[in-house]
Image (tube, rainbow, N blue to C red; front, side, top):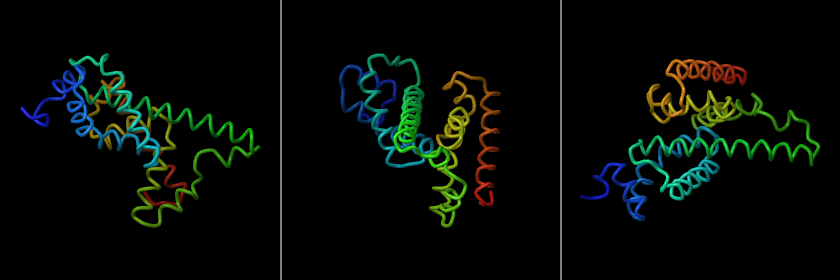
Length: 192
């Protein structure tokens, strides 16, 4: 049976036994979704590629701890979200250090200003970029549920299982994320 016809669980078990080709097939299957999650989380393709790479390196290194009875995609998304959170923390530390050394006003390094979002909103590509920037400014808890439901295509139940919260909590966080996103875009002068 070819690797492309095998289930994630079978491939993961083979990868745990050292099969690089099995792991490569898993990467091939999941890289687009993981990239989308990371790109929407950080609003930058280059940073998302770094997170994608970090995710698969961590998955390879942690493969012995993976329980093949669990959904591989969910396990991988958990790693990716953790890498996104790590990236966000590093960015926060970098901004703080830059402020200290450059004695910058905090308003210069805080959440992107509405005029920055509006600047991107002139073209279709710019509107997508503005949306990514706006999503990236959401609080992590709201951003994660929005990305997992709207961009990763998971059901609210899958997101609840993934994050260890109730489906009602997912529903509420998605609603709040959308409301905040609309506010951000409206403040930037972009009709939603």
